[in-house]
Amino acid sequence: MNTMKAAVYYQPGKPDVLHYRDLPLPVCGPDDVLVKIEAIALEGGDLINRATAAPEPQGTVPGYSAAGSIVAVGANVKDRHPGQRVATIALAGSHAQYRVAPAAWSWIIPDGLDVAAAAVIPVSFGTAARALFSRLNLKAGDTLLIQGGAGGVGIAAIQLAKARGARVLATLSGGERVGLLTQLGLDVALDYRQQDIVAEVKRLTEGAGVDSVLDLVGSTLDQSLACLREWGTVVLAGNAGGTPHVDLLALQQKNQYLSGLFWGRELSHDEARASVDKLLLDARDKRFSVVIDKQFALADVVEAHRYAEENPLLGRIILRP
Image 1: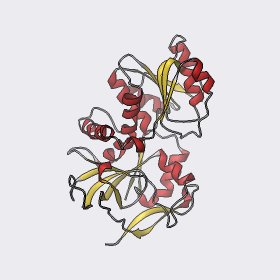
Image 2: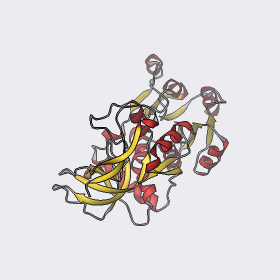
Image 3: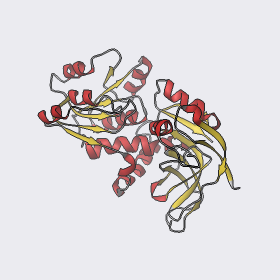
């Protein structure tokens, strides 16, 4: 077989720029694995790239994260073999029946872990863990604010932070979402549509501000800094709400720290990649929950992208080839 079904776009734009059609099977390079995909995690970055990123001249198959079974390995790959179930990340190519990914960006799925959950973990939980434990150095007793608590990374961060013993606040909207996130460990839900977030955070922290902020929205960065205590740290790990703007003078006057996090670059570090192996084992052992909002067939990719953009999600969308 030399072809596969895939979603491809030839110009950036709204979901209907995506086309579901036959494409050539991707070529497995010497350091890569070729994977038959069983589940695709629709990431926020997939939506942003489709809407704004110029495609390759021959078109681009979007998508970061997918899981399935290896069907071929490159000549230089010694620690992977056909038949293994893996979760993968690459900068494009997940929206297809087959994808090529760097072998170093593939992780063995432990027996007993569902493939859809495995597809979600490398980006959502990997990003959250790196932000909380490498950048924010979160510890028991800290108060953390998450901007954008109901998305995939936000839900991961709530659970990981609570397991570390932190007090967790998060911005979101919708009563149904609050109920589930409270069950997952959220201490305080802040409704960004109804509340003055800065005033409420200051009230909850007796005027001091939170110790740390994980900002997954981007356009809320000024607000995040206003919620932060002196000497506190904000990690900016997403821009789902738009381009961030920040008053650096205010940051300077309060001796605050601001750190950017792009998970794709972090994966050049051995320890970052190893953290995903541990997260997959923790998921198998039910140390946290992988929340899936809805599943779509890959053939319905336009509908899936539109749903993701027009609805208040709780967790990840899964596409099935």
